[in-house]
Image 1 (tube, each protein chain N blue to C red):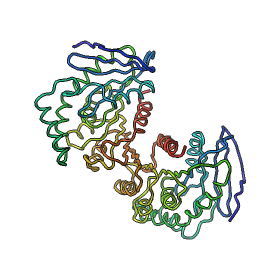
Image 2: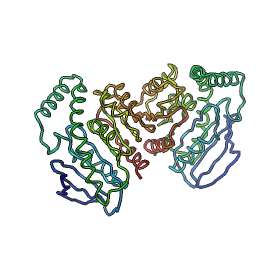
Image 3: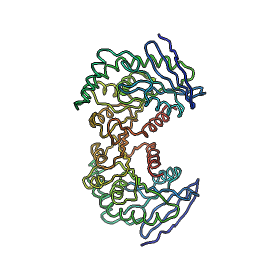
Image 4: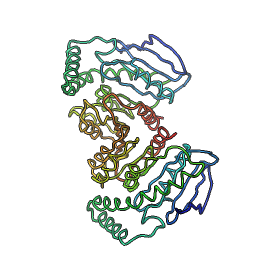
Length: 244
Length: 244
């Protein structure tokens, strides 16, 4: 097993931010300064972004303020990680679909399914080492929209350490729904009511697939990228109910 | 115009509770003790209940703690108000439908539409006098599920003083949707994903009808009466964003 290396540590406003590597993996860990023991929330970034992207930092700061650790991990082909010929081909196909107004779901869904197959064991290996840190303790949460849902749903279905999860802004797909049906932990799910890329019925069908007795859909008026900021507060409170 | 009479005042834990009459109307007003000026949220109760019902008191206490006044009003045929032959007939029909497993929506929807026609001018007259109280100031909110939505949607469409509203747990109906389309203030809407009385598509269609640029659907797993308690917190925060 590879060793966890903290390659950079900064501390500001009560948040300790550590950049880490684990073999070929690369990610970020945010922690409340001076807290002896707190639960961890895993943050899955969206397509084309990485563990240092502004939404990750913003969510991490809110989670740390609420007494959690937060960790993000660069997905395969993202951030500083190498891109394969398949990555380049799929990104080009998505960009062309966006530019020409062709539905992008039929490209994103299988490509993200492929990335999830690579990313799930990477996340589990990362969790194996993070949970050994003395300051990390308690049940684990997962929080990822867009591609973060494509990866997080099979991860949460596979890993019994994850006790609550926030997903959303993704298409229904039989393979993904099969993972969702195996999830029984509490789920909060975001959907954009006027999403120009994801048909409303597709998002509703994915929410419906979760096997969880406690699941909440938050559907907001607006387009694909217009998830309201107050939803992040809601998600932090969701983890407060289930992980503290 | 009739005069507002406070017929009983009690005060406990920072909440001043006043029972009032206004002509033949009867209701409750809850206020934060010692606050000079605060916005008002109107509370619409569910069918078969009244202004003193436990959910009204619970919501009022949360709203007062968040710095609001809250007022509830007995709907026609509810609480201490006289029941007409039509009321008796409709209540009996609903009870029979429930007992025999026949869909209750086709009875509830037109009956509540009838009650709303009576209740909307009553609420507006009540608001006319309440807003003259020196301690009530600022934009007005409305919060009502079930029958509280059947009454609140036409009320909010008709009264420009209402600046934000929480609705939910009700059926789509063309006449109600016509009112909803005229509403443009922010709306939060609750729906039970496994409602045994309200078909999922019916609730989703009613949410879809609102003309508001800012609207949020909160759909939770569970049956008709199982709206989670944390939704009340969410609704109080919603008013905090829009009325403070």
